[in-house]
Amino acid sequence: MNQLPLGIGLREGITFDSFHFGNNGEARHTLIHGGQRVIYLWGPPGSGKTHLLQALGHQAATRGETSAYLPLADAAEFSPDYLQGLEQLSLVCIDDIDRIAQQPRWEEALFHLYNRIRAGDTRLALTAGSSPASLPIALPDLRSRLSWGLVLRLTLLDDDGKLAVLQQRARARGMELPTEVGRYLLHRVSRDMTSLSNWLERLDERSLAAQRKLTIPFVRELLLPDEEKPA
Image (cartoon, rainbow, N blue to C red; front, side, top):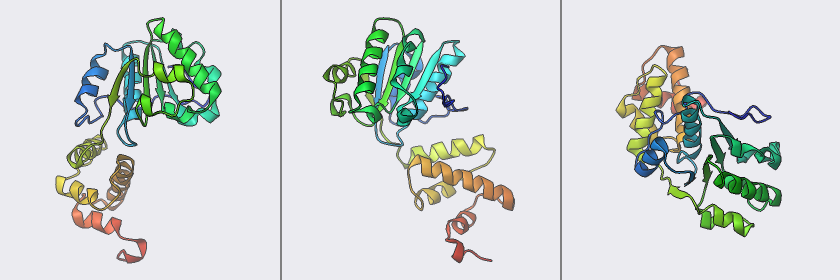
């Protein structure tokens, strides 16, 4: 893994096995089995774009391949010059490319990296919140390049999919999340996966501290405002 100055890299356990694809079957087959040199993933927040890029990086590592993961949400922390030489790696994953739209140096650097990658054997995976045609990229040549590869739209999980993810993550923590408790939680907190995962972490900590199983009464108590909780 080509390391960023900030030490940004792959997070442990963020693999294809820990991702619930739901209705994104085409993305599952394409990403796991490969065959595409350039892939552009787009979708709303919480659709799993970052997870899938991280999973690609872990997959490359298990194959002994070199890779780089660049989160452009943090682009202000490093220079476009970092893109130099990445075409020598087996895989380049660039997250949130919409975050550098309208930034001439970044757009130019990404355009040239794309051309160098296309001239070699490196695989490139990109993510954004919208399709290539909808990106506010100022450089016309870059905007057209982004449409050259396979473009896949990711959709959000439905409630059953979110519940499956929560139960999978609960098992990974050594805890059991009964279906009825998971559904109770889904209907009472913010339904995006980041918030749900944060709540699962809190439930894990509280249940361990109280030595109690996850039940609806227990979860209901934790969801109460502090001033309403029993003494």
